[in-house]
Length: 111
Image (cartoon, rainbow, N blue to C red; front, side, top):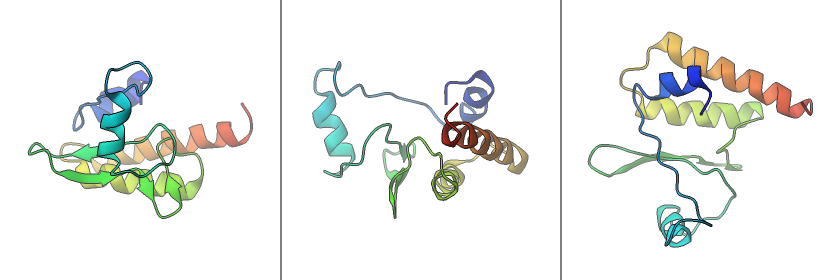
């Protein structure tokens, strides 16, 4: 999410807010509240609309996909982005998916 080309695309529709559970006062409590008590590792991602309503999270059928590596995780993450996307084009979403796929291949290969 912090690679310049990826961050620029995500910024078209999303405001990224990081909650550091270990360094922020009340961070663990807030994270637990947002996750509604679910565990599942970090990073964990939630999308909210402008009214503060939760639209989607990175908690998928097989667990948290906050850092998607495997194909099913990438699909879950992309579905989440599509739910929240307003300004991203189909081409830009495809570029994000390609970036995740490439990153996943590198991680799985141990690079």
